Length: 342
Ligand SMILES: [Zn+2]
Image 1 (cartoon, helix red, strand yellow):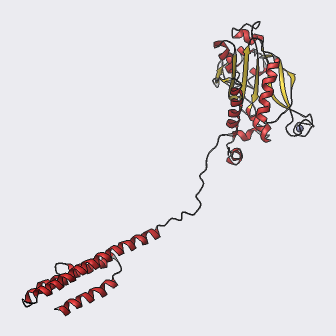
Image 2 (cartoon, protein in one colour; image 1 turned 180 degrees about the vertical axis):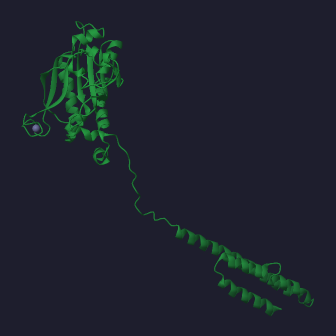
Image 3 (cartoon, rainbow, N blue to C red; image 1 turned 90 degrees about the horizontal axis):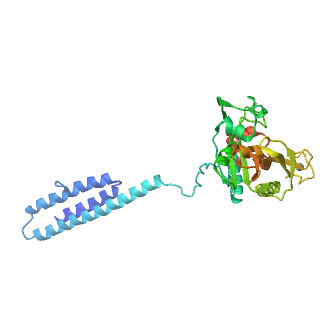
């Protein structure tokens, strides 16, 4: 009987070594420890063993059973560990590979410039007043002293959307609305999109962006206009440029002026960009026309003011050297990605 037990143990050991996966181990368990397994058979045959030997043989069989159980448990545990390692190896991620950068959007260069201009004037005490893009002729023209026969009213320049209603041709449409409802001092800027019925070319588009400014109070002078706009230009272009005023004409100001700054490239010496004049035209401005003040119920004997208007695309162009206004409206990523804010 002892020999039989030894033989079962030896066979089990050699069969155990041949097991490669969990299924093999389970089959081995059934063959040795199952109800009809080899160990159970030995227990059954115990009844044929002489009475005196029974305790010893029984003990040996139980030892064998326990040993096989332990060996199988250890093997199953090792096998599942190996399977896990194998699975992990197959599904391994190489965490040292560089990641893929996702494309992060950025503000459009015109929006970036609008933000920058707004920040400068807000820091100087101006507040932002937005007006409607679809506007009445009254606020777009009449209140600003633009008479019905003024060339700006020509169908060539203005989009009419309904009788008496236009797409605003400038952001000055906010001026009348604000002045009607506020008492001086009034200090506002009006950033936004404007529309012109133009043939599109490198320097004209059917829509572009402006920032208009207005300051009305007692004793506002041309000197205030010059000092505020000089400060603005120096901060925007981050350069200690010279500025000058040239006489000009706009119906809503009197006198009207153009503000020039010394050329950023040649610093006044003259180059192709400034057409060898040394000066670059930046914006239009002037003292608010007395008739405009009267139109909104302010006494021009008591109050004076200045106003200006600038083209936002033009400011981007002056800083970046881009001369074709159409690029700003085309949404070409190759162009726009140059302006990514870092
Ligand atoms: Zn120049």
